[in-house]
Length: 143
Image 1: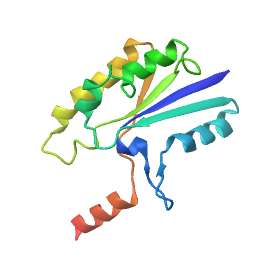
Image 2: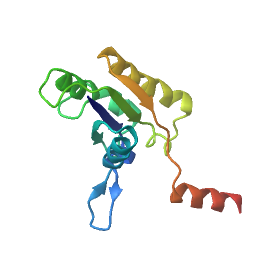
Image 3: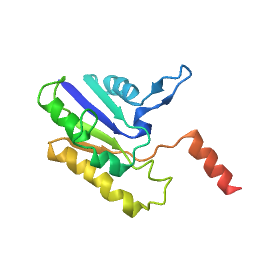
């Protein structure tokens, strides 16, 4: 048995530059952790589109090569290592810096989940993770 997961979203999924300047996405770390935890074969693919808002991810869902529906259907039809069992979606981060309210962003994030569900893939929603940057920003606001 192989568990196949797609991590899909914005720059937080793409990863941040490491000391060598290369992006360090969370997907490979998740793959290693799940292999150890579950003791089964796990394949984690990741597609992160830096700077994209949730609406852009939704609008580009059918576009090759990085659209969500395009990827899930391509892999389901056997042109890759097999269908995806679950998609971890992290979207809306880039919307936070604009005048968009949560009410404006939520429908686009929900639409991404519905796109995955429409091709038979379960989803997991991930919010903005805690980081040193958010800790420092919160500390500055408190002073």
